[in-house]
Image 1 (cartoon, rainbow, N blue to C red):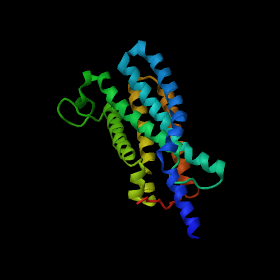
Image 2 (image 1 turned 120 degrees about the horizontal axis):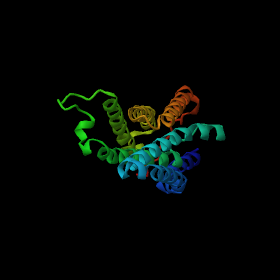
Image 3 (image 1 turned 45 degrees about the vertical axis):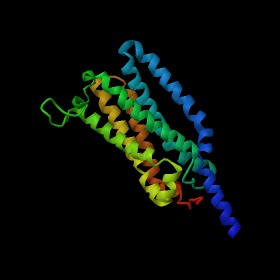
Image 4 (image 1 turned 45 degrees about the horizontal axis):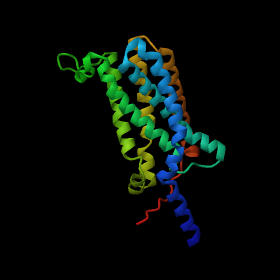
Length: 231
């Protein structure tokens, strides 16, 4: 029994290695780069560099986030068992989605109001901006806060420190981040009157994946596992 326990701990510890994450890197970066390049080429000449970068990073982040939500259901359907707490491809997709979302925020400010960040969230009188443009920006900002929390805890050390159960509960906020991201995109593009069809499709896909994961969480979500601490 001791030997089996030791073997199980080594197996879990192995899954918590960034070496396995790096093997998943090409599977993430290749399609992400393709989406970015495609959007950049299509938008750059008509709307300028910052607008192209904003759209490219934003929609690529959203695509990677949807792919992140797909990993666990597909794993469970394919393997016919619960997924472990850590899947290299899922973490790699999620980390790149979060980082691109933050880059998207940074490059989006110069697109409007001459880069005056305050005007994205507050009206000239100092009140909270609550028109569709302002609401979309506030939704995006809240999503960014969630992405920062997810990125900060997407490490081996965080999983060991929090423990499987608490780490899993914390990372359920990825569903809120996904919905906020889709609503942010829909609100923003409806203001511009462009890319609305694609954004609606993004919102529907996000809602469908969230419903799938929430309804099937007991049967599809990863079961808590003991995490080996090498100390």
